[in-house]
Amino acid sequence: MNWPDIRLSDHYLIRDETRMALLTILEYPDPRLRTKARPVTVFDAALRQRIEDMFETMYAAPGIGLAASQIDWHHQLIVMDLTEDKTGRQVFINPEILTKEGSASGEEGCLSVPGIYDDVPRAERISARWQDADGQWQQQPLDGLLAVCLQHEMDHLDGKLFVDYLSELKRQRIRKKLDKERRSRTA
Ligand code: ZN
Figure (cartoon, rainbow, N blue to C red):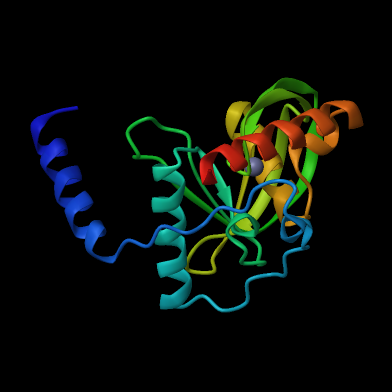
């Protein structure tokens, strides 16, 4: 990263701090995470602000993807940034997967299931369409981490979590572990 970039991003951080709102991320097994998200129909300033807040919340966590379901807003909105320097913001609104191909199994984690990682079966390549923050439809073939991440986040919009792919025994252990950590955090 060169100097002008650093100044730009510093400025950006300062500007954002003044209007930043960190949102609370719901944690498994919160039943609100099971809510099925409705489509986004209004593309206005309030939506743009919510997208900003979701990015800040995701970066602060830190994470690479966040679905609106996780912040208890049950509309079909996902933010994602797979870069390390916060330069790859992507917004997926009302996403649909048109085709799926191949299989990819990799370790996944989730901001709603903190500290837990496990293998989840996913399609390797997908073709998806979605609306951007202005309501314009986009369509693109996706693969690699981007394809896996979108499938993970779209599950959230459906009320589904990556732990649902694991055995009940594993889920029990995860619930116990998270419960214990929550208790020690509030103790
Ligand atoms: Zn997740």
